[in-house]
Length: 459
Image (cartoon, rainbow, N blue to C red; front, side, top):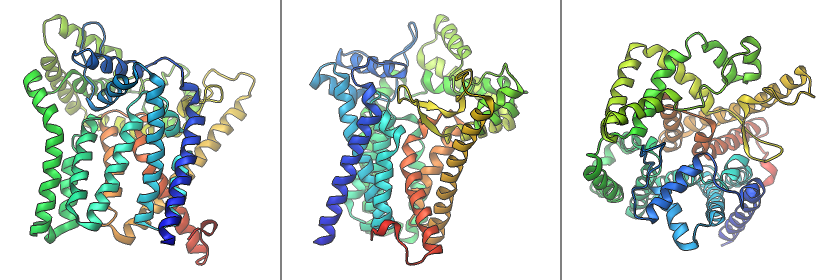
């Protein structure tokens, strides 16, 4: 009884701290109109309410995002009217739940000490807190990913059908939110084979797996059926443009790889000392303008969305296979970009890309001071990931099968985004897992040096 009461107090504390943190880092967004990619999601949501195809694009082009986030927005708009702040408030609640789920997951995998500090740090993590006030899908997507891993562990530890059903439903919702999750079912099947081994074919587990995949199919079916009748179930413009954009970068980055490696690793402040004309936004401006022109040209020739998607994918695959080593070199740059630090802009509190810090700004600060500030921030970032990696190694040594879900979700998003396209914002869904690993790694290091020490005495 005491433990349940204590857990409840921690849940309430973490929830309230996350709400306060979320409001602090995102309050500047309240009352503001949509901007950047927010406009696309807002337009798609309005199209749904008006009974049209939910798409956005340039000119006459129609590019459809994954349906769930626009559906979420349209549901909020239907209930509260075109009230952007209502969306922001609901996302603020979701952010608080992410923090609570982080606490519950870390407590279940390790102990309450690691759980409490993980939940608190997630609640204080300003990029997630800030994006609770932006109409991007990342916060919504992060909630679903963390919830999915939590439910998987509930299913793994209890082997109850209910948890497998909820896990399957959540995986379906994840796939309907972001196309990068399309290959997740293959990973889940692979982990099932590793974790359960011979038990996989027992009657009880076969029933559980049936309910898991049946729930997944039920969630996906309406969208799959809709795609089959409207597009033949093939690739759309969006998927083809991303891949062909990566193919064009093979030529665009030739002769500049060293500079971009320095720019992504340490900041373009240093890279531009080597080449002052270097385009520091080449990797983040995506897809490049040439892709839009290619899509528009194909559209003018009479090709529909399905045909354009197929043409772009064929062109991309052909170009990538001509220089696969350069494609993987570029992917390494995206891996670094994906895991780059994010800073709050002191004036707007909006998340700022660390890579472009001090480029043609703050002339009142001398160059040595600028470089020192950047390197200090990078050192702190590297120190954080040292504990993340240390925690991951300790986790694997402790029980690689038990923690396979946890490690695999981190590896999956790193690999997929590195191969396609990555900016720091896209890494938000796995930052709660990074934070849990950081806390666990730090606690293990403290424990190894002082066996009787616990972090601040929380037991």
